[in-house]
Image (cartoon, rainbow, N blue to C red):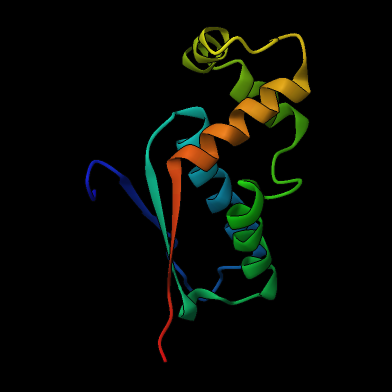
Length: 121
């Protein structure tokens, strides 16, 4: 960890593809948004296997989210996490409104997730 931030890196292997990338993105987004863990996502230019990886990183940098990353059942699981529910109530989130709950999740991702892009010349 760096300055109490959790470091998250993907591990590329010969079978790593879009599905593995999406699962890794879910892990890092849940660390930052659901668990409220300050997180550094370190991404190296040699790990860009698909152009969609860069599009997802761009989404994180611009909006704090990866569009359509989570299925509705996964979001329900996140929103039902007791510490997350408690944080929503303390923040005054209308827990009857899915859009407000998701906006709270994204706001926490934006606050906690730091992206480090490593490029070689």
